[in-house]
Image (cartoon, rainbow, N blue to C red; front, top):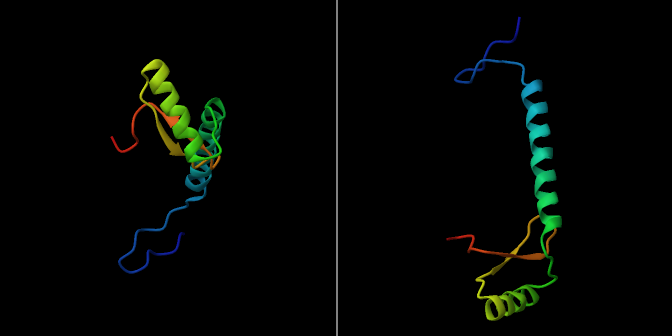
Length: 84
């Protein structure tokens, strides 16, 4: 018989499957983010990314914005502002 729930707490239940599923989902998310990052053009600095964005705007009329990538710690360009 499982232990009683602590006073004011939730009833006890096994969570090992829930944790294993959560970790598997996290690994999948991280892998998808890494895969997406590899497909993007990488810039070492914000200045380099912004200069490239300006060049694209001048040559092609494309509005791009630089953002710091949490996966590779480099810089990429986005079509829209992240806060928009």
